[in-house]
Length: 115
Image (tube, rainbow, N blue to C red; front, side, top):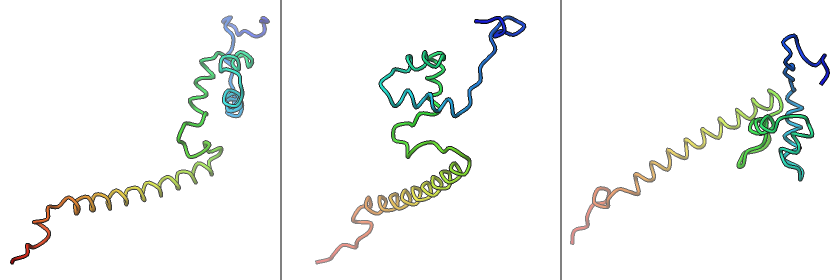
């Protein structure tokens, strides 16, 4: 390492990476036959850093799709999810009512026939 790569205290300065670089690094770990440690070594990163980026940017199992890339996509996703929550709450209410109806005893809902 060159002397110019260090600051006044002798420590190496902290490198900063933009989101695009991080996402690309995560993609390299997901689509390929190389391990995370190998990709990290090739990129000059500590493996733990790449694992942290994977927590942030890798798709999770069962997720609806890729994470939104910009604010407009994020707002659309929020609107879609809020509408889905409303539908799920309506279903829950209907199911609770039908469970209450179906769990009633026959004596309470139907009059007995007299013979």
